[in-house]
Image 1 (cartoon, rainbow, N blue to C red):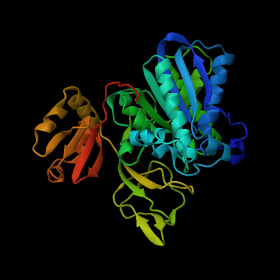
Image 2: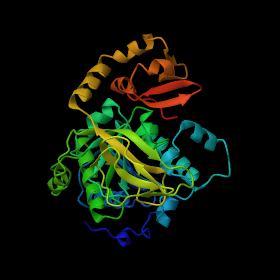
Image 3: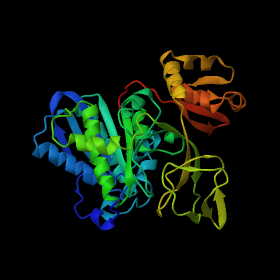
Image 4: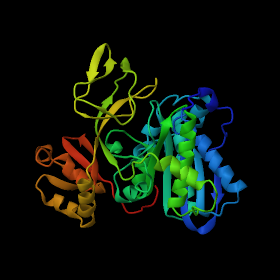
Length: 391
């Protein structure tokens, strides 16, 4: 691996929000790529630029449209993850409504968020669907490439076309990611983590993912350019096709916490209960369960210390597909202590006393995630949605 921060300098950052666009035939899907939502993650930006140039220079026939949106421009220029707040943790409708109603005192990330919001809104208005949203990232520790999704069936169907591990349930542990917000409107949305931040292989893997997404969405034909087999092999050699994991634990840092991850952990490495993982304020942190370490924190910014995963069985995956297709979830509302959320047709409000007898896995099986405790009640939100108008 070629890990060289100097290869990822920010001098060539495009000052405009749109890195580029391809306007193909009118009747086709629309791909929207986000790159650089975190300013220290340049691999996706470089890979997107390479793909745009190859499509134009090789005159590759394109069905539909491709739009590449740059994320945190301010942070990208400075080579930092973010300046004030994490741009990938503030995507809630109430935040956007508030920002729209104030004329000043916005910090750098809030200004970026509003620009991206209106950029997305314009793309949805001026392009035809179906829409595929792809968010390109890298990690602070070594990793094989992987995909993260909100657990909707349309997300699962598209992500299953890639030969990399798929991680479900991240929306339950991260507050306000961009793709979770987009999923609220029923669109397919995948996050792709290519590798370590400053590894040149992360650029190559990001490019391979983009080409694969363009082929699998039928924007381009696989034989439309000579190098496709090379890129496909980059991902297929990982040999994780249709392997799913679920997040079961997250260690969240508190403000001013002195946290240090033990050296040497790689993504998807097996860990044992009581194994030492990190040190916090001089106190040893150990694994609470057996599992798989996921995204251990090896950078200064961010409050996601580490996650623990479990592999999901094929039986559970197929059972959840069947249960959702026959709409078994409607029977949940017949259980005393479970009712529809009057403010959301996709929400359930559950009495915590009842929830003790209905395992969280049951809600997951039926497509409900994002367990929130509010006003003495538990709230679960359904991930499978019909396409709705972007607000």
